Image (tube, rainbow, N blue to C red):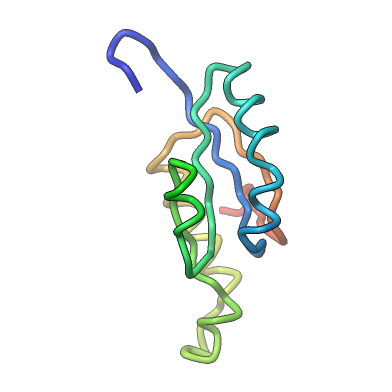
Length: 109
């Protein structure tokens, strides 16, 4: 981001997807974001971030429910994820949210 140009954020939810699948969307997401004068910020639940780093992508994370559910079986995971998505919306103030992932409800309170 530059001081002389305002760029909006586009959150791109790719939770539940592996890097191999995410990487197939990169050109389309980048082209769309560029056309709309936006910066894509990928929301992932990956354990390995090397692909994101190698591609010089902005990203943020949500917990991987499959990996973490056994650690806290009593947690209301859908509510917890809704709260975490709410925090990401407040943090990034996105102008757009693109959902390419699985089962993300960004409209939940």
